[in-house]
Amino acid sequence: MDNFHINRRRFLLGTSASLALTAVNAKGMTNLKLAKTYRVALIGTGWYGKSDLFRLIQVASVDVIALCDVDKNMLEAAGKLVSQRQKSGKVPKLYGDYKKMLAENQLDIVLIGTPDHWHALQTIDALKAGAHVYVQKPISVDVMEGEAMVAAARKYGKVVQVGTQRKSTPHLIDAKKNIVDAGLLGKISHVEMCCYFHMRNNGNPPTEAVPAFLDYESWTGPAPMRPYDGLPHIRWWRTFTEYGNGITGDMCVHMFDTVRWMLKLGWPTRISSQGGIYVQKEGKSNISDTQSAVFEYPELNCVWQHRTWGTPNNPAYPWSFTLYGDKGTLWASTMAYDFIPQGKGEKIHKDVVYEKEKYPEDNTEERIELNAAPATRLHMLDFIAAIENGGRPVADIEEGHISTASCILANISMKVGRPVVYDPKKREIVGDREANSLLIRPYRQPYKHPDPAKV
Image (tube, rainbow, N blue to C red; front, side, top):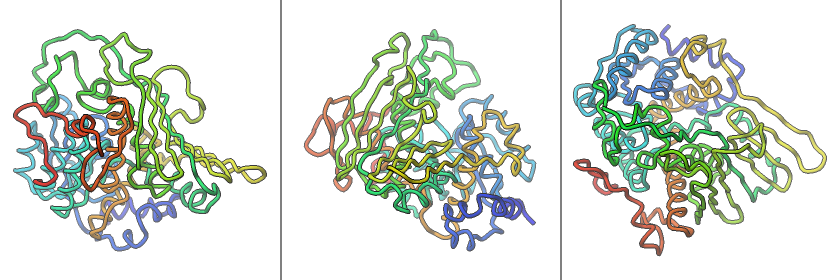
């Protein structure tokens, strides 16, 4: 019996079996061609790239044949870890150039765990090379990158799953089915989403020489070239708008995507945002430390708030969303949910599902998010099911694009100082030339921005 059979059986026999079938689709799970071994590569071997790859190894029959990273030290360390985790025990081929890796290997699946400013080009190139793609969120740094990624996925007929794994989080699947879909909230006409983590890595490190093991030119890629002031990995790059879209782009995208999934929402009709650097002015960071945004729908406002200082409004739910209905309220996060009925009625509480006994290797994995591991495993199963059956995954690239672009549009609104209305058919912000010019970020030469009409 191969590794996929074993892990699938262990999973389905566990307490999350019914939730797993809900997330992956019972028909899709039944029809999986379980004998298939997928040829897999990872671009970006940092913290979350490896975490995604290890979750895939746990639930599918895969042969990790190649890894790519511009940090040689990180790449070599990842190669050793993968050899210890994958069934073959082999160290994958190691590359510093992802295009060379794509050209030299026939790949079924490419996982992308690089910083946000690289997601679009690498996704499109992997699709052109014939691979299905699992790309981390947010999918892009500008709106038109996302449009091009959706166009490429459709043109080349490949599955693209976005790492918004809240849709595969067992207790949130339960909340959608047994609270939202069951009508316990009644009419939902207000949503609040927030992040109060102190995660803005604000500092003033000095400029220094680029170490020999890091190809900083390639790391920067299409983004503006900043003076090198230390390894950008994990948190440092996220503190700059050159590479991402701040905490709205990083953290709101998860919560907003989950709310849209739960409430079956598409594009917002209008988006507005206000904020800036109000408190933490002492360091180099140029992302907002305080920001509010409103994503408008008919008779429904979805409101986002983040602060990287002070205390959360509810210490039990510092990164969360709250659905307000006329019959009750649902607080939900990656850790739990609480349903509070209006008037008399039964409160309902559910906690995150852990699988530390089923997957003991989780307990020794460096930096693993134990609360997210079961969700990512389900997300990978859903990804494989979509590949096998030719369908769309739960976090299809188009859904990831809507959630990502909406957060980017909120930042555009904050920058221009007025609400924006995006027309996804015309791919433009209606009646606002200044805001419309911000749908595409200039690329550093010689990199060329992808065009949705020419992917």
